[in-house]
Length: 294
Image (cartoon, rainbow, N blue to C red; front, side, top):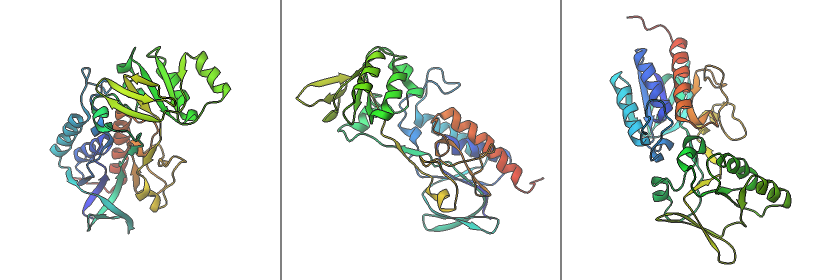
């Protein structure tokens, strides 16, 4: 085998695991497709140790530098196929074949986004946000909109009421009377389904049927996500209804030798959760391999 462990994904989970495995003196490869969800974070203030906040890109740079200090090899590319090879795995990396005794899948997920002009800039300016657990505190007392299917958005809108009295739910479909009453009792405004969403310099504009428009400081879409777990599923790894991989208390999937960490596992999409998964998985991987005494 070329490597003791191949890590698919160069986000917080993958890079943290690489640091652990490097410090265990293991041969580690990190394959980074370059599209970590963390890259879109303008500034996070709930990651331990960064009270003044840090951007997702800066955090990834620091984690990559740290992993490299301990010998992890980090390459940019895409793993297009993953197969069993004896007691380990064979990976197709941009047309090349590599072998690894263990594999850690840290490929994360991709949020489904609203189809709206100026989305990229709106995300960079924190006018569109995806994770209220991460950053709802920064939306305190702002005009907040939650957008998506009624069944999924109601709970998130209620959560946002912890931070602001000005919360509006923009549903994809008309709401029934029971939903209207429940939202009104919670102090949440409810509109008809918007016909258009646009990013403006001062936030987000929603156009309603009949020509009315509303302005918001921040929009939280609730449109679901695409979990990047297909490589593991092709080997028979079990997934839940959303597509997240099922793992045991050592982060091992139902496939022997295949581990998973971060957003590809958990619906609590937090940087600190990813780091915790990574430490558990890397330690279990090291202990599962033959001893590497010096």
